[in-house]
Image (cartoon, rainbow, N blue to C red; front, side, top):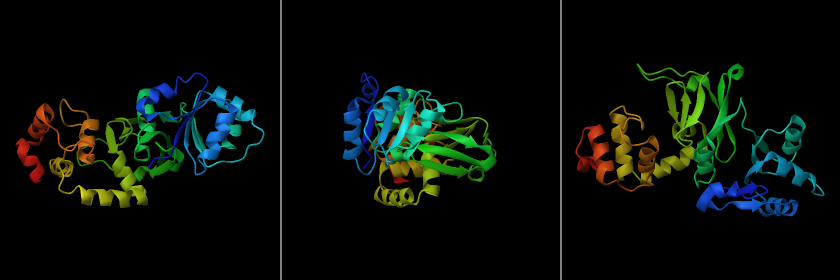
Length: 264
């Protein structure tokens, strides 16, 4: 179960981007205080810099909380320091910390599976690591050495970093790595849950598609007319079994008949 999502704003413009997710909206010091006390184990917060600094400053007392904040805007250093005294972590998109485009960012933050997707990150050359920010606003450091190129495949270019595919892919130049592959390697809890999921869906269409795709040496981007996101949703079991043109396109790319995929 994902943490609660709280949006701090003056005019409800941000909350509208989350659609059916319907985050908790806080638009006063009283509502911020209420949300902090209501979600005692922490929540994911999204806020514009001006309103949240102003309303927190109006509260009678402040202390460190288990909440995590994604800040939209460009606060000055003292304001950042103030927010970091209240929130467990504060992430600010800037030239060093790159994040998804806003439409994809809101899609990931509104997802039940936000912790299994990435919203942004940064390259730390001195530490020889890529720092990845998950949708639940926790950070993960992945060493450069983990990003190994396939035979005859592109090498990772750490000077050209981006998160794409609605948080599902880390892009380093022409090199790409799947979010679930990173998490499987570096998050023991994710690995445990993923093993259970793979066992439970072993006979599913999505499981068969993933096995056959890997046997063919194909990435999720290698299906003309279909997005990597669509293939990922099928493999995860979000789509039980595709039909029509989607099934035909998948089968043609894999070089099998549509009714043969499930047998793999």
